[in-house]
Image (cartoon, rainbow, N blue to C red; front, side, top):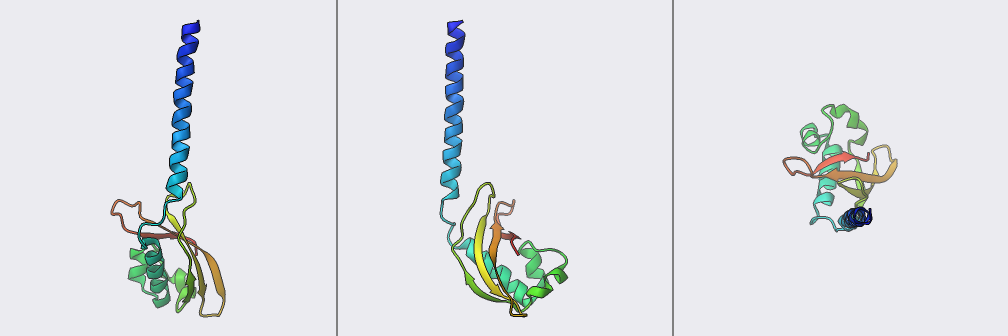
Length: 128
C-alpha cells in the first residue's frame, strides 16, 4: 500500500507542476507587448474604412457583409488610440479608442483585433 501511495504522490506532484507551468505561461503570454504596431495599425485601418464607408475594406478587415450597419460611423474622427493590451482568455488584443461620430457624440471603448486566423491577417473582432 505504501508503494501505491508513493506513486500517487509523484503523479499528483507532476500534475501540480503542469498546472503551475500552464498558469505561468498564460500570465507571461498575456503581458507580452504587442507585436510591432500591428494591433494599432489594424485599428487605424478599421476606423479609416468605417469613416470612408469603404465596404470592401470593412469586409477584408473582418466586418459584416452588410456594411449598412456601419452607417452611423461614416465620417467618424479618431480622437485617440491607446496602447494595445491583452486580457486572457481572449487570444487577441484590445486597442483603447476614442472617436467622434458625425453627430458629435464621443465614443470611448476597446476595439478587439486578432490575427489567429489561418492566413495570419489582422482583423477586427468586436468592440464598437
